[in-house]
Length: 471
Ligand code: CLF
Ligand code: SF4
Image 1: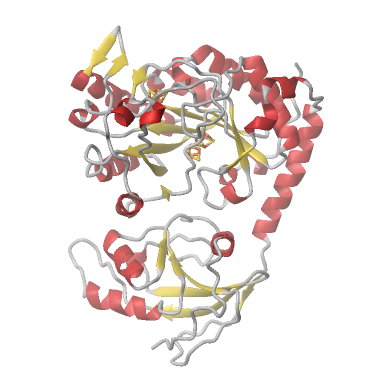
Image 2: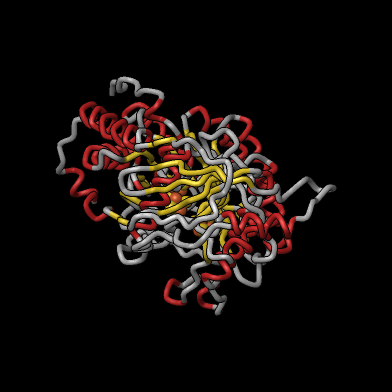
């Protein structure tokens, strides 16, 4: 088939990926194509199902697809859901254990839907040998599931891997980890954006995940996604059948906070099925069965043009939020500030004044914004003492933290590129929500996303939390 006309560069922006950006997932959809039935390892939390429409967890799909069926489905979904941004291959097995159908699908998609981002999720065992091919095929985003970097821990998660026959126990885990880290390095060297997924398994890798986070970030992973173990007896997994417990929400939040102090952390993952379709958390896969897709008439060129229009409109709307800049006040006012209802007062850590680029510990100034449904307004700049002076010359960090909390006392949340674990806890204890999910995003886009989250969850205050005096 003739290749489609080429999309604009803007249309391929990674900022549109709903898993890599906490803002994008509110506006853009993704599609998983289940073309990869086999796997080359066994995880104790996995039991794949290929013909199941009831369970919503990784490794499950309603029907397997051939590459031809997969491409037809992608074109159909891309026509019916014009805010589709990403096509991913995530199973039900491991995509790189099924290279022929996976690469055939990706190759065809690159020709027929060049405006869509391509994504793939793998256990990493076969990644080093395929990294080059993935980059050549235009796979811009790859997720590697890395649950440990210690083979002793790995031996409790992976009973075997397929490697010149079968390896078991510690040897299996050691080989798998080495392949994962080598694959990560090769992808990063080729400019692919790599995210690491880790399954939090209480009593097995919980205390070890900060080390995983440190190692993978040092090798260039841009995002870490820690997901709670799903272990139910009815799923028939080893862990489910043997009473391995799932983590509590508090345990998950704590480990995400610890690992998030080192870099970007994903916390909106939906642990999708292998045939997930649509927005995260709002699955539409039932509308696109093989039978239904076969009955659809699609014009791929017209569909791509429509996607471009819809995508550009969303991006334009996000980039042109009303954004008034008032003359900043350099001193903290000593009087209460009364805000209107349904507004949110949010603090931002930014050195360049455009993006969320600052580490909390390095801040000397907070940018204070008032956000409403129609407007984002910079209302004030508040000076604070720097919390962190480097490893060897710490100032009075307790006093600096106390001062920062006073300066933030009328704010619902603080957005920074990074917030360390100790200040994170101190902020939470003071009722101020620390947030490092929007690192390096434009301030207006990040603030709008936070406002929409609070509005959707019914947390917008009647009168904003701004009636307290700011000393
Ligand atoms: Fe799919 Fe994964 Fe690509 Fe996203 S899902 S292959 S990166 S397009 Fe996203 Fe789903 Fe979580 Fe995966 S919410 S399970 S992280
Ligand atoms: Fe299942 Fe994925 Fe583990 Fe393979 S790598 S056993 S498909 S969870």
